[in-house]
Structures are given as structure tokens and as C-alpha cells.
Image 1 (cartoon, helix red, strand yellow):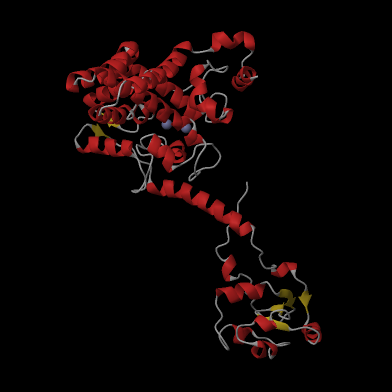
Image 2 (cartoon, helix red, strand yellow):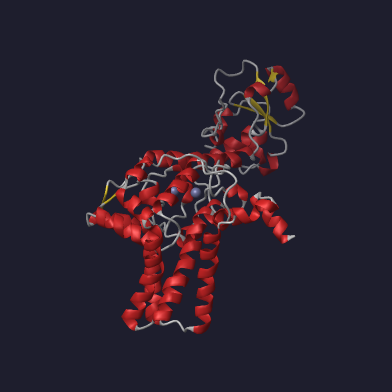
Length: 411
Ligand SMILES: [Zn+2]
Ligand SMILES: [Zn+2]
């Protein structure tokens, strides 16, 4: 039953199942945590090794993303090699392969041409896409710049050797030669760090498309959330990133957690990075405002608003007088209001209101007796029952509550 469900989730028939599994990826993604688990049971963790693992994890997580997927800044050659080696230590494929897939993800987000299509579920977008070959190849993305990039091509050619050295040998040898903890180096700085780095990176494709706010656009699944940012060295402001992918920042606000941005900015200070690209602030604010107005419009649509002048009956002075004998009708700014049910709630008392029944109380309402505030104008408008025929030259139809009303323009 479980196997049948798995086959259905990946859209694969039984006969194709074996041929479609990416056995190498499956091995790396299962054997690595298994060795860590074995090490955790047999080798006590030493503090120096733990510090080394944390430091190596941090530099592993700097990754390829903002430089090679998006060219959001220019890196000097030493920085390119450093990022390339550090990215290799994550053992998640070459920058050439990874950036190509990521560009398809941006171009075809949430469609079958997106290699980690979030619409196929959390498991698929997190790890499933790496375990089985896709039924549809990732959509076309321009990688001509990567084909001409000698550092990218160098790493792609020697990827398996580089990733084996950076992923397994270096963390082990540093702990071994440094403080004689060879096995601890392998289990913790190697396997534990790599497992955590894998799943942290995978979260960019899974929970960053599932959990959080759509602060800039809600048509795609990308989301902004602090938790994703904490797990991914700042890549969790993913809704922003999908809208402004060439921006070297994921987080634009000072209080948001984006250590990758801080690293790039620090590199720029030391002359290792340049041409840090940022989108104009007003464009970012425009997208933010659109979503804020959309949320406010929802609130607005759930509020009762007053009737418009054209929706009300036009009433003659005589009819107004006649009706005012039966119920408490007051004329203000050309509108006839039925205040019968409000008389006892009037903050100024019954008397002031009742003495204006059948009369024009515009002057009294607008400052003569009391200079009413926004709430009073809004409330009064809800009591409109008619418009006086030829009674006034000017009718104020827009209440304070309606002055900034959001109107959706449709094509
Ligand atoms: Zn994404
Ligand atoms: Zn991206």
C-alpha cells in the first residue's frame, strides 16, 4: 500500500520504478545520516569537534545560490574558488548542475517544468525530486554565462573528487590533525554537518514554498518566514527572492536574519565582491503596498458601507415634512436620515436631536451645535433613507471612511 502510494506520488508506473530511482543520490542521502547515527552511538562528541562542525557547516551553507544562479554580485577569483570549494563540501551537485536547475525553478515556478515543483507536495519538493528522475525534464534556462565560466567548468569537471575531498576528507583531517579526533571529525564535522546542510538547503525548496507570508506576490507558492531564514542562512525570505531574484539580499529589513547577505556585504568591504545588485526601493515598496492593500481590501469588503445618493429615493420637502411626523427624520447635507432608533444613543442627548426632526440640521451637525468627528459622519451616513429634491446646492456624499476607499481596477 505504502509503495503503491509512493509510486502514485511520483507519477511512476511499477515497471519504470527501478530505472527511475537516482541510486547515487539515494545512497548519499541515506548512508550519510546512517553513518552519523552509528558515530553518535559509538563516538562521544568532543567540544572542539562540535565547534569545528558548526564553523564548517556555516561556510558550507554559503553555497552557490546568489552568485552562480542569479549573478547578484561579482566575486573576485579567490572568493569564487572559496565559494566553489565550500559549496562542494555540501555534496549537492556541481554549481553548473545546481544553478541550471535553480534557474528553471525560477522561470517555471509551480509548474511541471519546475524541477522542485512545490505543487507536488512537501516531500517531493524537499527530497523526492532528487531520489527519482523526473517524468518531465526541467524547463529551458539560459546558462550561456555558466558555460563560459572557467571556475564553474573546472568544478563541474572535477566535481566528484572535489566534493569527496571537501565533504569527507577535509573535516576529518582537520579534526584528526588538530586535536586527534579522527572518528569524531568524520562522524560529526563530516556526516552530521553534511546531513544538516542537506536538509537545511532542501528547506529552501520545501518549507520556503509552504510556510509564511506572501509579502510581495501571492500568485506563486514562495513564502517569507523567519524559521526558513534561520534554517537556510537567510534564504527564507523566499517570496521576496522570487520577485527580486537578482537582488543580492533576501532580507531587506535590518532586523531580518540574512547572514549570506552580511557575508557578501563584508566581502565587498574587503574588496572581494563588487557590483552588489539591489532593486530600487520604490519597486520593492510598490509590491509590498500591493499586498497590503489587498489585505485591507478584504477588511473593507467585510464592512457595511452607506447607500449612495443614486440608490436612494428623491423625496420632496412636503413628503419629508409629512413623514417626519411619523418617525424622527433629520435633513443633513441634502440627505434625509431616519434617526428614530438612534435618539436614545445620541451622545449629546435626545433633546438636541429631537428638536431638529423635520428640519435642516446641517449647520448644527457640522459645528453649529457640535463639530462631529469621523465616526459620527460615518454613522450618520448609515441612517440615510432619501435625498431631498432641490433642497441643497451641494451634497456631501463621501464620508471620512470612504475617502481612502480601495477600488480594484479590472482590465
Ligand atoms: Zn523557490
Ligand atoms: Zn533563487
